Amino acid sequence: TPRIFSGIQPSGGLTLGNYLGALKRFVEKQDEGIETIYCLVDMHAITVWQDPERLRQQTREGAAAFIAAGIDPARSILFNQSQVSAHAELAWIFNCVARLGWMNRMTQFKDKTAGKNAEAASLGLYAYPSLMAADIMAYHATMVPVGEDQKQHLELTRDIAIKFNNDYGVDFFPVVEPLIEGAATRVMSLRDGTKKMSKSDPSDQSRINLTDDADMIAAKIRKAKTDPEPLPGSVDGLRDRPEAKNLVNIYAALSGQTVAEVIAENAGAQFGSFKPKLADLAVAKLSPITVEMNRLMKDPAEIDRILGNGADRAEAIARPILERTKDIVGMIRSR
Ligand code: ATP
Ligand code: MG
Image (cartoon, protein in one colour):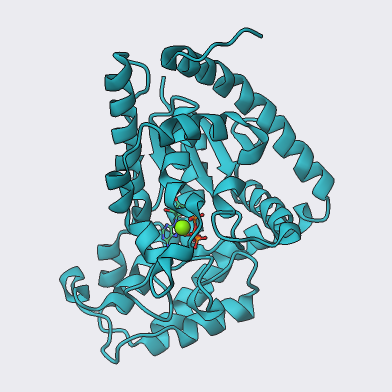
């Protein structure tokens, strides 16, 4: 039976990119009746320094966003990564399977250290994809809904699983399938159509946060970078127009239409009219989530209880898989 695992880092507040590329699809998968395990990956978040109090706050806020968006903690397992030690333990074993050469090809590490001294990056940031492989393999998950930016890490997860199986002559870890679907698998920054929208981008104007109010969302979309041309008459006309393409993709993902339908409906429209339409749509789709998040955040103890309960259920799945892994590797377990 298929099992889905995915996670989001509590490295900041969730963005429209996280919502369309990940969270919205997490809910769809849950509602299809597949076994779903979702995680606030706090151990990934600290690969870049996080203020401890903010990390706690962002983890709770992330959990509130999941629930507000439609994750039902009774049907999905929802927890924070550090409460299940199997992630860290399996990651160490995977660190010994993965090769330096593989890590050196990872573009996320290059992107996150671009313009900075890579020598000063944490070892954790470098090993990030190995921990991600452990997150998934600790549950023998085979389907992983993610945004386009995580495709390379899932290929690496596959390589680690295959090499582990080969090195130990077993058929133990399954091969993962990335689920990268929909019109918004890569939402771009509102300030730069060639850069991914990210919760850790220094510019708040580059993204829409799930906590932004209606005025803020409208203002950010109004100020979003565009070119001076009206919307084209065909999808083809979006080529080489990254900012226009991004806004059309966001519209399509929010409205549940195809990009072709959005283009057909708005051919020849100026951004002066398309942007307010997009802002209205974004507010209509996001504000119920924001309202529910704010309500849930009033009871942090309840959120912590949900995360603890999810961690117990996650642990029950991961523990036997980790123990079997240790047996395969030749580690004594005598207690
Ligand atoms: P950070 O800047 O801290 O890396 P992030 O916004 O990239 O934060 P992550 O926690 O790294 O968010 O990623 C969580 C999920 O959201 C992943 O599945 C990722 O592919 C997806 N995702 C992140 N940004 C986007 C985006 N701009 N468009 C679509 N999906 C995205
Ligand atoms: Mg990221």
